[in-house]
Image (cartoon, rainbow over all chains, first blue to last red; front, side, top):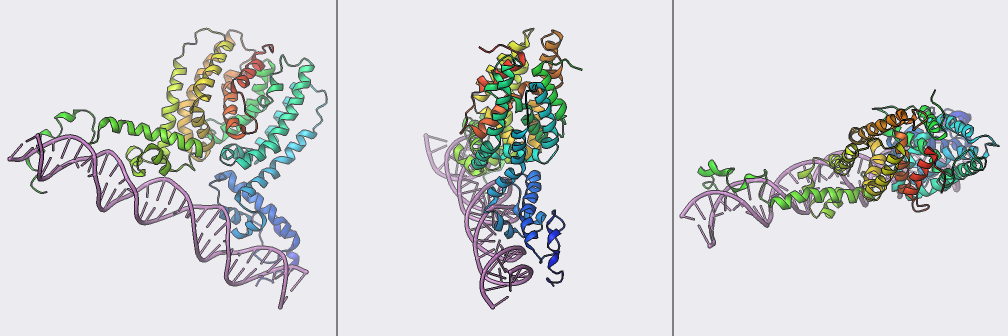
Length: 223
Length: 223
DNA sequence: TAAATATGACTGACCGGTCAGTCATATTGC
DNA sequence: GCAATATGACTGACCGGTCAGTCATATTTA
């Protein structure tokens, strides 16, 4: 009964998780999409269960493939996770590096970063990817290193540059942010950690939280 | 064995020497120390391997007891972890609550908190306990709740009070820190996360990091 | 039909928690 | 004092369940 649905079925099949048209009929297009489907399924699975606790069998089910199929695309579970991190975060980092900051005041740039963080990270699954790296990283050095090279170093370089210019323009009273660019990202990290741990007892309003931080640092008057 | 037990069973059972603690037969001193030994071993084991990956068999080996013995002192693995958190962190929280802050300027109090954090938390195994809570908490709601009630809520109350007084005294330009006391602890959390993930590529100097934060917030001139 | 792909039953290793039995120590009897 | 007896803390083999990764077989493509 496999052939039934002739080949053409190809193209669209791949899509999301569910679509999965009965077995059979894989065209190169569908095949190409399989890798994406697995990554997408892994994101869902690991986001809800964690990397260590997430089961590849469930990833396979979500992706509409068999467990063995995953091993045709990824050598092992850890590499699958690594590819997931790359797929989700690298584009955002690249966009950040490419963003034209010009000579805008640091406060203004920081406001934009907050907005971007809230929309592109916290408002999406990407916050779960980051949380996964933070929580599982200590146990998986390869993932920690990858994340450091691919994300942390690059983001810090961007922030350091901004901070340096701000100091030169007299927008900052000292070079604290140049020496420790991490300080600008701290509230974002804390918000992600908090949401994973305490949201059920005390939900946090990320944007309000981060703007309060800017108020604290830049001394803006409260509304 | 039949005869033996009769009569006497009555009277003396309790009275006599053994007055003290329930105790069975083993030396009470030895036994009292056993619980501590297990907790201490659990700290080592979980610190290096993580809670989920840490093996109770190894905890037992480190403590010099058999695996089954652990279950004579703790009902299960999760409770063991919880008791560990309580034993390590509650005293510090209590000390913080009891510390006489008086009318000292917030900046001064904050400096003291940094010193205390560096010495009592970051310089000890307590940072590992906190990291464990942060990384394993999302997967173990009971632990997250316990930590929230026992540590987070109490610390935030203390900070909020300090921030409130600082606002009234005009030491802060707005109520950002009153609304989000977490902001004061953010660098500490980030430092703990960082040390677990990236120390091998870029070690962080906690005290310098946290003091830079205070410089950023309170606007102190760079040296 | 051969090659490329995909499948899912299966294997081996792991580990939390259990429990029947052991034995060090306390108590009793004389 | 000390042998007989009682106690319960302690032990570790074992059980049940889980899951990453494998591979013989089946399906699809060319």
